[in-house]
Length: 495
Ligand SMILES: Cc1ncc(COP(=O)(O)O)c(C=O)c1O
Image (tube, rainbow, N blue to C red):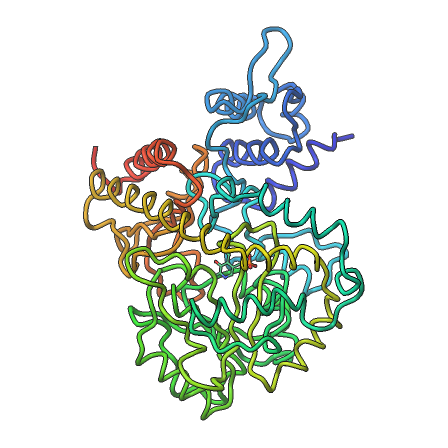
């Protein structure tokens, strides 16, 4: 009988049947180690046994073990085999297939629903979202955790009744009040308290909006390239995605579409992933179409606090009164992702239905935490933290740009990017295989994401998403040198 380890490795190998066997085996072993399936200080199966169980040659296993050894994942103890290292290499890869994005992976056909299988087939989050160059990861070590805990501890000692019971009012009133002011002042969002609903982040907000404002088989417009997380939730809700191209001014609306979409999902302040800013004329065009054709604009404002050389650009929602816009924000980038807290600002006519629907679907909780965040904002700590992070991320971005210029040249600089955000897109020559580069980098423990994988259409620019926010300059430098070597090996740059 095969061991559980072998079953796991075999399943992983079958999920991705392409590429050379020894490389695939190396990747799944790296994944198993970084995911803790083979925990630190455990012994890997003897190469002869594993080869037999996986039905591969012993050399294939030996090659993979050797590569793991040279990359620091394992240590060899004479006479007693190969052991998982106590400390993983500095750039432990987030063990995800960079090529998986919108191409569903093979899945076990057992008891999943069609919808569940599709959701998992498109799942694409890195299991370990930290390190060079994971995009969208803020520096969670720089957050004043002790300060927030102090506020929370105080509130925990004598919580109000409202913070302990079921809530169907859209979340903690104090937080909605604090957000109403914050969003008005910093994002020019028209948000009265009753228009705000606290959610567990943008993923949940998208789910709520999809369920309540659209029916199965309705069409929604999404940006191409765009955020795969949003697309997956929309798909899982049975919606049809119509991917619209993005240029330097933002999404290009389909003026001839009939019937019109139910909703359009956009990232106007910082197009994800290219980094552009939607122009005023495009914003006005979209608003005008949405009014005339009666669809909703869903504005994803995921990281707009981080504009470095200019003040943050006002949100689309505030451009006109009673705009047909639902505005989604998140604390994932400004505070930290595991907080799972975000907010939705809805037009007044949707306030009651959406608040009620949110309570019916998710019930909502963490009200003491929400109250603590309200105090954190009110006390000026939120603004101070954003100011500090803006400086830090700007420095890191500048440093990465200087590396690109110095070691790769002008042609590799981001094409659309404004001076903003937690990642940039390294430009690559048209038609090159960005997935191959990402895979090569992953094998060396550096996570980069291939731009082509963010497209639904065949019209794809090539590039690599490089997150820089959570890594200091020495680590950025080291990871960049690894990436440069990969570019060399793939023939993108010369020797
Ligand atoms: C464009 C975009 N929207 C939303 C999110 C996720 O937000 P949340 O953590 O609030 O679910 C991300 C995450 O990286 C993102 O890139």
